[in-house]
Length: 159
Figure 1 (tube, rainbow, N blue to C red):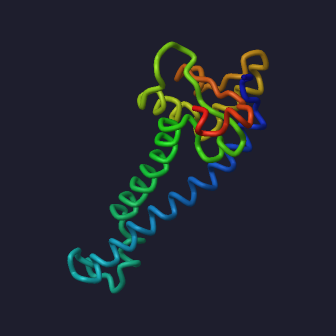
Figure 2: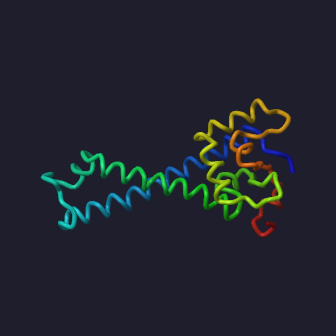
Figure 3: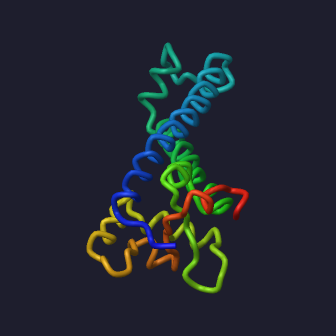
């Protein structure tokens, strides 16, 4: 199977960005509602504010907790899908899959390196310049490759 080109990867990244945004929004809603319930019921102090929303918006601590929570869910989304099937939902839609370029399994650590090295998608720009090998920065550092699958190979029962 050939390695995936830039534009197919870009389309999968756009798809995944939409899904990751939805995951982040759901995670944020769960935590914000939890904070509001705890604040309204006096389990957490309102610190002189009339409404929980005012405290949450004014407090660096609450905002930081929410941002870390949402970030963890988004990171978890990518790592879990990559580890369980080698594909995120966007990659599946565009028939892409991650494979190891060495005789070792793709571990959680390698996937985390891949996620960080992607630099929010900027690492994929290297594919435009690496015409011969079509490898992104994250592929090189994590020793992985993204292959374009056939329709038959993309069916999860064929893994």
